[in-house]
Amino acid sequence: MNGDDRRGEIRDLLQVRPIAVAELAERYGVSESTIRRDLTRLSESGQVVRTYGGALSHATGEEQTLHEREGLAVAQKAAIARAAEAHVAGCSMVLLDAGTTVGALAGRLAGRGGLTVATPGLTSINILAGVPGIELVVLGGSVRQLSLGMVGPLAEAAVSRLSADAVFLGADGVVAGRGICEASPEQSTLKQLMIDRSRDVHVLADAGKLGRAESHWWSTFDRPWTLITDQGASEDQLAPFRADALCTVQVAGRAG
Image 1 (tube, rainbow, N blue to C red):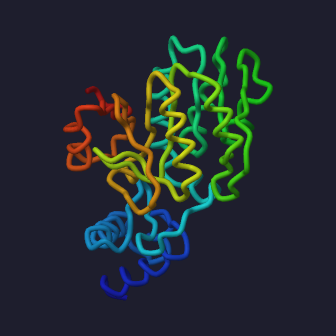
Image 2 (cartoon, rainbow, N blue to C red):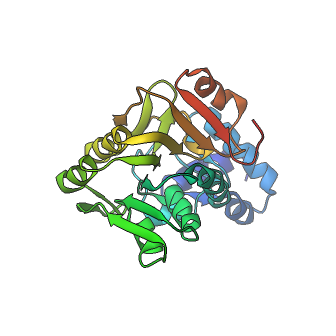
């Protein structure tokens, strides 16, 4: 199979599910470097979206389930969670969004004491429920089966009744000067409330989400916020965020 045929088949496979570089290399009997070059060419032509360690389809526009996202950018999410944990110091109450990257942060908070955590995310709830020293506030509502996060009027009413020292948000995509996008209006509305009710705002997004705007519903920033991403982010990806006067960029594991 020549390179063009292989790339065409990879593009079609990615419309079914995300696939890791190592799996593709084994499937086609080529090196991982060859697969990375294939994915780069497909990404540059807009046919796929690179994730660090693999790729997913750009064309389908379908939201991935939480289970599917759990296997993407695992090391990057862990690094982001380590960096985000430092921002919890001095907080007595934090808001945690739903999602896998924020869930990685929840896992790190399980060792802390004297902290109240409010969250609509079942991932974080399962991690923190019953942990000594953590007062867990469940922001109840209707459970979205894809994200396993609670949304809707009940969750919004709960958020509107509290104030937090910091919020840690995930996103389908984040765009400098525009905000974070999500697959449903209920998600974006809840995130906007979480932003408005928090003193400090942090967005946890691996490099594959920077500049992505496939989803149609947005939460925006009208005051300072911090983007925490991973070392896979290129300077071209980071430049618009660095130029945003409201945004502070933190690359996990990298000085400056």
